[in-house]
Image 1 (spheres, rainbow, N blue to C red):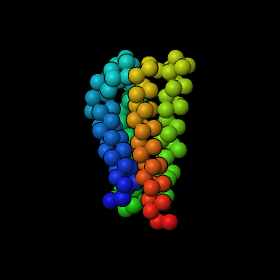
Image 2 (cartoon, rainbow, N blue to C red):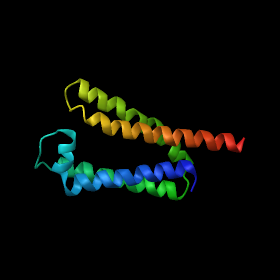
Image 3 (cartoon, rainbow, N blue to C red):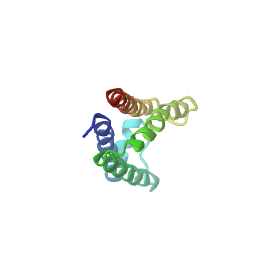
Image 4 (cartoon, helix red, strand yellow):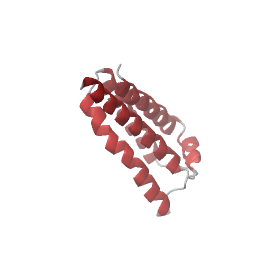
Length: 122
């Protein structure tokens, strides 16, 4: 598995764990964000969506789908911008930014790995 595939695979596992958390123990997960507990179904829907994304990430990594890896970099890097905006607008607590940082670091890892493999090919 290439370094870029490994970075996407690890991110997929991260999504799997977070998704399972929101699906199985949603109020525990919300507590990590400082968000009040809920009995609304939307939080489990978020968990399901994260599990589906985890599937895409891990499968793309397994087959070295390099185009997918490239597509994820700007998308994952943008998460911190959205989360910071949510915090600044008062929609979410500051703890949410921590999860945006994970996305940003994962995007940087993938980007550096892709760049390194391009350099090695040249």
